[in-house]
Image (cartoon, rainbow, N blue to C red; front, side, top):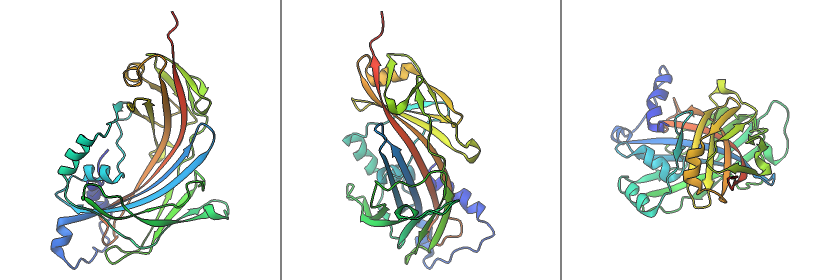
Length: 307
């Protein structure tokens, strides 16, 4: 997927005609850029428990830095294969991380004031789920490369309704204007089945066989995509991406190579994601994205091949 830096040019073009933000230090403005990602994650586990997490990160880095790698380091990037294809997910070993960090300059996660996410529902909603103030936290040290703060919801047990509109408000700071972003969440995945069995019920798959996946289709016209992660006990994982059309096929040959064959166990995570860009006209923010990731997780066992 293109990095937010690549998207910033498009966002700037879309914002043409708006007054340009005033920048006091032209040299600083031309040598650094600030990108924001707001991520809403909702996970339904095999036992039916639901967890929701909202996070927001606003990253300032040199224009000469590798923006895609920086997004991976701070955990804001979503890597997807082409639609209809699959990819092996990197294991993220220490050597790989060290080499990645060596190519980066300093990354600052900046404060944008108080940040709140609220539901803009079609019907009235009351209670704690209606408004979620995000807590400000220090970002863990990553090789003396990343410094600053990020935002996260304080209670993962608070469920947020799917299929509703959301508003993210920030009061602003000395470097970034206050802003308000509106975006509609997709519907939660429903009736997700692997090989004809509800994913949350536990699935038995045949070694080397492809897995037919079916689900209640979403709103492809809104740009919704589906990606499915299959992870083995060894840590090997495969990710496949599809149109949100209600059916797809996970290739057996790729799964066999990653899961380890007969008797292996695996986790299958079905994700529906929707992305919306923001930022034109916001002083201090060059590009941004709000991303919804709604998922259902189940367990799978690789059956012994029948003679």
